[in-house]
Image (cartoon, rainbow, N blue to C red; front, side, top):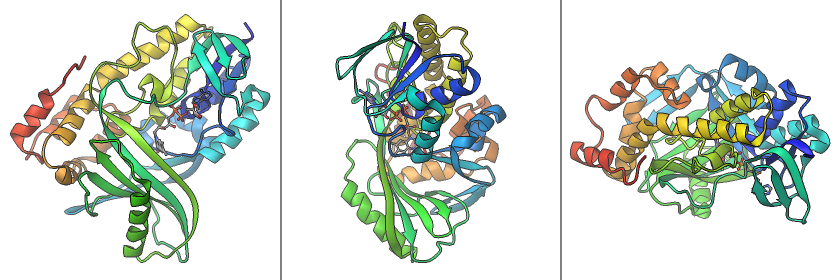
Length: 381
Ligand SMILES: Cc1cc2nc3c(=O)[nH]c(=O)nc-3n(C[C@H](O)[C@H](O)[C@H](O)COP(=O)(O)OP(=O)(O)OC[C@H]3O[C@@H](n4cnc5c(N)ncnc54)[C@H](O)[C@@H]3O)c2cc1C
């Protein structure tokens, strides 16, 4: 075998595996392959403080570009400040750090044609072999589960004057809802630069970027911000799982990571916390041969699928019951819950009493529709 481990796709998940292995298993001969001209693509990746353990915070810290001690949310009848730190990574810094750490073991502009557990076929015809190959080529084209979608366009703007924000506004849901759960997401990056993101939780994966761009301009105007230079734009169409079978097929031998392995939070579509967890788990394997890595990645995917049943239920209630324009009521009610419940929700480890809190009280969607949605599981496993 030429390599101990080949990681196909230098996105968030495989990049974190490579980063962690470099720190704790420098003896392993690891190759990270990316089709693009840089690792990481074009992303802002954020996470909440309680998503990671203290040790995980420590090892990811060099990749973090911004952090804030708390954040705000705004709904028609609720404005709340939450004193829990929030962190953001930028893909350009991520790419820079990985390039520094890996040197020639990061191969860019190198599309892969085929992946198997111990072999990689490059588009240029070359074949590489390894004890194990992890497929981290990102979100598959079509999910095998029933999904709704988180659609967004985010633009990083320099303003003519300071914006006045000192912490992120994670959700400003006081905006027209446009047949979705819609909110603006704001990250203050410096006194006069800001990421402004129009986000819509929608039943269909139709993202008209021009609509979103125009809406960002309107929103900025309403806030009396003068946009002076567009620095960057990103967009996404993230699956939010409602029901189905766990991906990938648990009989498959191919180790996968990140979105390709289904390792994301069903309600937010975010994958960073699980990618960090997988990186730690891979680093903890004695010899990372294909059967062991496959067993590990499939076990984590299967465990996540089981533990996220409640999140899929919430998604069904959000997307299949009530009017799309009234979905904000569910989120407004959620943000009325204790800080710790909110933290555990994002970290994906709700307790039984958190779940009871989320489901009890005056329902924000009609009861019979909610029940019908809850039991509308199709082929849920
Ligand atoms: C714009 C955006 C913002 C997001 N923000 C957040 C966030 O704030 N927090 C969060 O937790 N999640 C966020 N997500 C969701 C999710 O975490 C990201 O999509 C994340 O990048 C997924 O990681 P991944 O490693 O699975 O895939 P990716 O990061 O998409 O990486 C896949 C990589 O594989 C490469 N590749 C694909 N095919 C080949 C091939 N044939 N040969 C070689 N290379 C190949 C791609 O070029 C890419 O670099 C965001 C998603 C998007 C799109």
